[in-house]
Structures are given as structure tokens and as C-alpha cells.
Image (cartoon, rainbow, N blue to C red):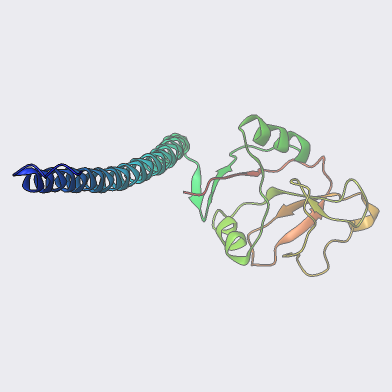
Length: 212
């Protein structure tokens, strides 16, 4: 014989079920909130990480730019110091080079030695404008051109072959069978080069490249 249900037992069971559902809902809500917070934290962390990486890269870029600017400043300062130094010595500046024009006379080899001791070399004439600049000084001067290594093959003191020339009419000619292996420039006109004996004594002109 089945026992009769106790009064109030069904309502109690309903309360228990309701409380259980509320606990499940709260647990689900907690999990959802934690997932949302984790996603937000993860996104913020990754964003922060990218931003820090970008900052590091920008810092490195700025450091590289600063280093380059510092090197350029130091180079300009050095060039300016040299410019002032050479100008005070009376050297002439023209189109990327300083020029020293001698006031006495030497052989071609002695002239070149003097240029080298000054940190220069006998002039290498690369253009009509440079030749016209040299002619302003109205001197017969040794320049850095010779065929002493091989007769008829004219080379500049920097090793480059002759391409642009300003020979006088009939030159070079080894006049009267002389061994004229060195070149002097005269000032009579644009075409004023003459081959001469290297042992002759003339003023000379040195050149030092210096682009500002």
C-alpha cells in the first residue's frame, strides 16, 4: 500500500528545481562574462604588443635618422673647416675643386711632388670651363698630363686616359725630335696645350677635389 504524499512536498520540489536552474544560469553567465573579459584582455594585450612593437621600430628609425644627420653634419663641418683653411692659404675654389697656383718654377716631376706634399695633385682638366678658369691666371703652367709610360698614350696623373683635349695647333709634336712627355698649358687662347720636355722648369697648378 503506497504512502500518501506529504502535504507541501511538490511546492518544495519546485523551489529546489528553480534554485538549480538559477545556479546553472548564474554559472553560464559567469562563464560568458569570463570569456568576454578574456577576449577583451587578449585583444587589448595584442593591441598593446603591436603598439609597443611599432614604437620600438619608430625609435630605431629615429635613431638611424639621427645617426645619419649627425654624420652629415660632421662631414659638412669638416668640409667647411677645410674650405676656410684652404681659402686662407690663398687657394682658389672653382666648380668642386681647390686650386693652388705656384709662384716659382720647377720641373714637371718636382711640381707633382710639391702637389702631393700638399695633399693634392697636378690638375686634371675635365672641361672647357675648367680650362678657361686656368687661363685666367695668364701663366704657362704644368698640368697633370703625360705620355711618359708609353709614347703617344696620354694619361692624367689619376690614371684616366685623355678624352677631352685643348692642344695648340700642331701639338703634340716632340719638337725637333725632343722627348716631350709632359704637358704645359699656356694662356693665349682656349687651345693652349703644348708637350714639353719634363725637365723644363715652369710654374704649375695643383688641384684638390672638394664638393661642398
